Length: 152
Length: 92
Image 1 (cartoon, rainbow over the protein chains, first blue to last red):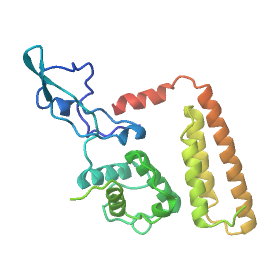
Image 2 (image 1 turned 180 degrees about the vertical axis):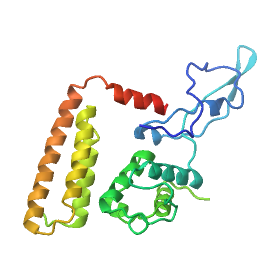
Image 3 (image 1 turned 180 degrees about the horizontal axis):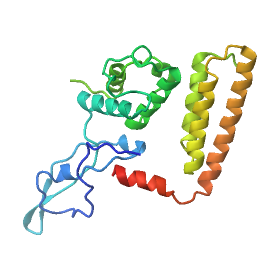
Image 4 (image 1 turned 90 degrees about the horizontal axis):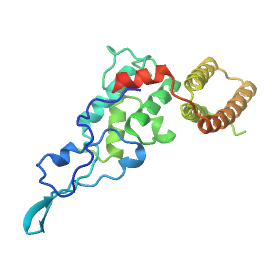
């Protein structure tokens, strides 16, 4: 099972609640890929609250973890990456606009498998009625962007 | 059994693959996935409604078997095989 490399930073634990926190502490707390149940809670990263504790000004850090936000470019890269891993598609012939059935010579069973791979990659279900209409990588990217409210 | 149509067959295919992926055991999982794919591909061009119905009933029965065996496998799961851990190490 491969993991995409677009997430760097390792998770940071045991961070003291009251501390001087550098500006990028919030960014450093980005956790690695989490299961679907955790994806839905995305809270904005708070700036540190200042508080007076025992006479001296101390910054309180509160950090939240979340995946980096999806962009159209990112979705497209991941979709193409998953398609390149599929062994019935030759990577040279694959383009963003290549039709699965007409250009790449796949059949409906293969298309079901491709959509399932996309479901696994992005972590959400795609209902069958809408899945059978997605025939090019471009359409898949558009569909995911619509579902995930990604726009530019 | 409902009248078979293309979208029903594809839904059944998807359900079978999804269930097969849940096997904790590497051997059962890879066998189930491979067998489902091969069986559907082999009978891709069947037109006769009677054979279609027989095949679909077989598929529904296989789905029930897979679901039961997945549940049992999860109850008594064993260690991950070397093949799986190797793959995970390479990925990380």
